[in-house]
Amino acid sequence: MTRPRPPWTPPPRDGVGASRVAVSGGPWADVASFLTARLRPGIDWPARMAAGGVLEAQGRPVQPGDPCPAGAVYWYWRELPLDAPEPRVPFELTLLHQDEHLVVIDKPHFLPVTPGGRHLQETALVRLKRLTGIDSLVPMHRLDLETAGVLVFIVRPQDRHAYISVLRERRAHKTYEAVAPWRADLLLPLTASHCLHERPGEGFMQMEVRQGQAADEPNAHTRVELIARLGAGAVTDTPPAHDRADGLDHGLAQGLAQGLAHGLAHYRLTPLTGRKHQLRAQMAALGLPICGDRIYPVLWPAAAADAMPDYRDPLQLLARELAFDDPVTGQARRFVSGRVLERVAAA
Image (tube, rainbow, N blue to C red; front, side):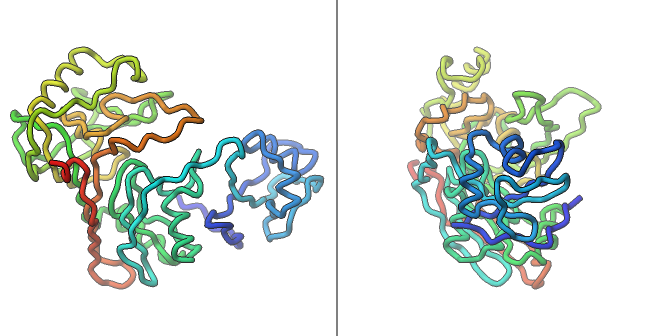
């Protein structure tokens, strides 16, 4: 169910939209006590309030000692800690299309779509708001941080449901390109069908491919086609054992190395469903892990919080095309990425 929109929303600050928090639990002595307990530790809320950085539901600035009744709503703007500045992602987005309904970009690798975690200013949404001056933008769909290509944003709030329904009801045609190992024993084209489920606990980053259980009907389907072979003698992307989050089975490692010895190939992927990490998980399940993938088939350890990002060896996955009949204007829409995957260009 879609959460109802609030009657009033503060304007963004430097491209960052306001966040909303409702009072629960307690009782709380004052607003500062609630925010300190409820949100990320280490924030100087009295200083934020003195600068007008916290508002009540209708827009009045809040003071630290103000009462904090149950059910009250407050607005604030996310900021990153001063001791953990956000590094600049050194790749630019390209504007593909803009009209009164949609803005479309060609997203580079390593740029997140929306703010979250350690990412705030260095996101496609915030960059695009600052570029276009359109504060109402929201993404029509998502791409993984590591994935490049076509990304569509909706301009008008009243159009959001119509456009998002296009994807939810599978009325859009999407194609991707990927570079992965070549398997001579795999007859292409084929439609891959797997049962994907989210892993519990600490394994949530990876989707689990369930096989051999009658109750687990396939819920992910992708058309896999060969575009071209890219040559032999490729080096495996498997990380050294001491760098991996968990041990890689020796047999799997040996199998990957043998497969990569036959070289790489350029593939076209057409998802027929829309599961989390669908293309990455299914390609790995086929014995064709996408080059540069740090999640499949083996989850690499997360970098230290103070480590500089490593922009080498980007995930070789590109959202090449998105096409659909526009539910608002009625026109046929087709957006195509102009990017070329690094390993295709180098072949």
